[in-house]
Structure formats: C-alpha cells, structure tokens
Length: 271
Image (cartoon, rainbow, N blue to C red):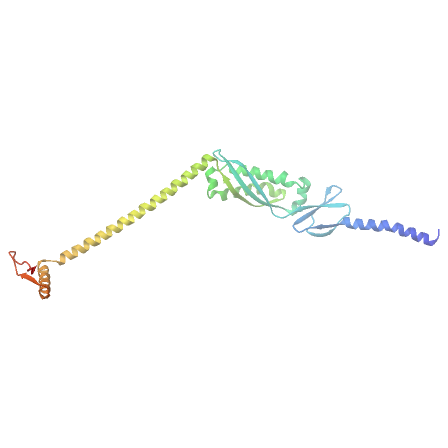
C-alpha cells in the first residue's frame, strides 16, 4: 500500500475522533442560569458541593440538576378549626426559598418535587396546629400578626434544617361560619349605634349648657337694669319725653298733673 493510501485512511480515522472530542466537550459544558443552583450527578450519585450560576466544565459523563433559588409563593386555602371548634376558611400565603448550601441534600433525600413532598405538607400541618389555639374572633383582630408569626416560627423549626428558608407568612383572608359572621355584624352595628347615641347625648348636653349660660346672661342683665331704674329716673325720662313732644309741631293738648301725686303730664291729641 503506497503512502497516499495510508494518508487517506489516517484522515478517515481522525474524523470520528474529532467528532467524539467535540461531543465530549459539549457534554462537559454546563451553564447554570441566574437564580439557580446546579447539583452535579455522576452515574446516579449526587456529588459534593454545588454549582453557582455561570459557565462550568465538568466530567462529560455527569449531568447537572438545576434547582430554583428564587423566592416562591405558596397559597394555601382550607378549613381550619378554632379553639372553640368553629370551622373557618383561611387563605394563607407563604413566601419561601431553597437554601443553596443544602440543595444537594434536598435533591438526594427528597428529589426535585420537594415542594409537594416536604414544603406543602408542613405548611398545612403548621397552620392547623397553630390556629387551633385561637378563638375565631382573634382572626379578625390584631392577633392575626401573632398567629402568622407563630406559624412562621413553627415552619422555621421543621424546614430550616432541611434546607427550606421561610421568608414570611401572611394571613390574607378569613371567612367565618355564617352564625359567627352574623354575630360579628350585630356586634359592630351595636357598637356603631352606641357611638352615635354617645355623640347625640354629648351634643344635647352642649346645647343645654349653652342655653343655661344664655339664660344666666339674660338674668344678670335684667338684674343690673332693674337696680339702675327707680321712680326719680322714670319721672325724669317722662319730663324729657313731654318736653320733646311739646316742642313738636303736631297739635296736642297737654294736661299737667292728675290725681296721682308725682304722675307725668298727660298728652292728648287735639282732636
């Protein structure tokens, strides 16, 4: 076989090697998107550590499981028992995320469906456990913040060590049974009526006080005027009025004095 034949077969042999190298390189490359963590798995065994977001070169025979690290929301709606054994409908919203340092343990022990197997059951259990210690009326008062805080504390105790971080728990909606709803509405109506009655009584009292002060003022004025008026003042005022009328151009008859001593003149029209 000549040299050209050897060269030709050598080229044919190098082609598969080239493509094999390209395939192995592609398999060894892994890109982790922002907000995710990569868990390397080689021959079915979870490897130690985790991969941050970015570009990575790995063993070409390994695969990477990508888990979401971003905050996620779980909305739970269900019937819960109160302390007095009333059934309430409660809507709860829980914000949670995966602890990347324990992402490998989560995948190794639970799998990718860790929410359905781990997170959701503990949320439901903690809600029912905590809410059963409170009366139904407390869900409609400032105690709501206390209830949500205790639910979060319960979830922290059970989920943090497993690799789930609970960020917040919010009680969004509470629907009481019909009997309790009517009782609450009646109580609110009675409270509003009591406040309205209190306002009306205060207004009437203020009006009564105003009238009393006005009457006292009139009485005081009359007493002052009464003290300042006597017989001599009236006689003098009568003389002044008689003099003014006498000087007027109107025809009149003036009779000075009568049977009552000290009485004023009588002024009669001329006709």
